[in-house]
Each structure stands twice: as C-alpha cells, then as structure tokens.
Length: 113
Length: 114
Image 1 (cartoon, chains in turn green, yellow):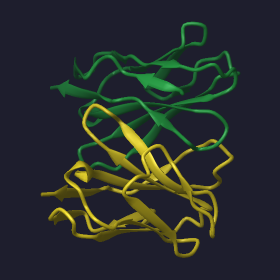
Image 2 (spheres, one colour):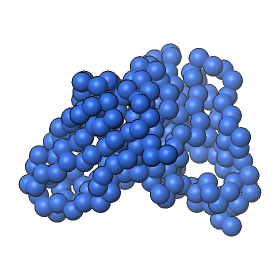
Image 3 (cartoon, chains in turn red, green):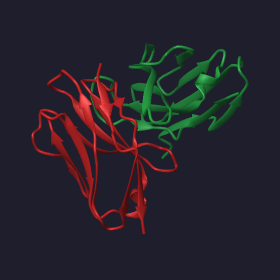
Image 4 (cartoon, rainbow over the protein chains, first blue to last red):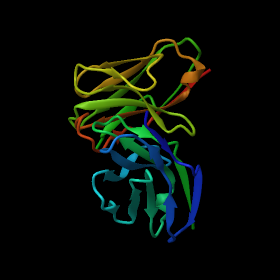
C-alpha cells in the first residue's frame, strides 16, 4: 500500500519569507502523480500544484514550486514571498492512474505578519 | 459558482441514530467521492462513484453506504452512527476517475456522534 508522510505537523514563516514543507511517499510504482492541496480555515480544499512522476522538471505555479526527488521519494513544496493568505493546512497527496488519492497527515502553516 | 455543495455543514447525532449527508456538483463531472478527515490522518476515501450508476468502496467503507442518485448527486448514509464516525466529511468530484487531475471539494460537513 502506498503511504504519504508529512513529518512537520506545524510550520511557521514570516510574511515575505520562504518556507518549505516536506513530504515523502512510499511506492513501488514508476508512474504516478503527486499533489499539494491547500485547506484554508474556510475548509474547502483547493489544488496548489501537481507533478507527474515521469517529468523531471519540477512544477511551478507562481510563488509555489516543488522539489521532486524521485529516487529519494521526496516531494517538498516551497512557498516564496509568503503572504498572510497562505496560512492553511497543506496536504501532500499521491495517486497512480485515476483519482484514488492517498493523503498525508497535513502540515499547518502559520504566517506571521 | 456553486461547485460542490454539501449539506448539512454541522450535525450532532446520538449513537445509533442514522443520517444522510448530501452532496451535489454542478460541473457536469462524472466521478464523485466521499472522504473523511481526522486529525493527523489526512483524508481517507470512504466510497467513490466513478460514473453515474456505479459505486465502489474506498479505504474506510465500514459503517457507511452511498447512493449515486444521478450525475449531480452523491449521498453518504450512516445507518447506525458510532462515536468513531465523528469526523469532518468531504465530498469531491472530478471530470473522470481514470484521468488523474484535479479534485474539486465541498466545504465539508462536521459530524459529531455522542
């Protein structure tokens, strides 16, 4: 069974600074998908960024980027120029073909003004 | 832009009572899902419906039943609620179950079983 581990239950960052959230996963598959979802205090989850395992290039979405290390099975999320609106729970998720996502336990990010 | 709508948002039940969580999406998505969220455990899939007329068990289906009423609606029923079912429940939808892409989530339903 696939597992996704987020080792940081909580992180904090100063506004405008950069923070990295960690995620590791365990799989025997060679082709899969990785995601970071954000859950703001309003509780509706939204997709932040998506990475296909067959792509070597790290995905980037504006201030959000990932560091995908396939051999190490690591998928960290970097948030640059942190903003107050980035405060949320962040979930790393894994999936092979199809939408049966396996989620990590989440990291609560606090942004200090 | 309604997206995925869940009702009710909050519910308190006594052990043994039954209830149904309703979910509707207006994005013409084929696939729908029910997850539960517990502290430190992320989201776990309860049931999913890959397409209208089909339902399948996820990781934690025991104690739940689902109905895909039509393409828009996917309900989750607790026949005899237990304290272990205290959780936040999320409905989600996607264009296709086989096309790994974005899931769209509802705002969640907080259920407490006393």
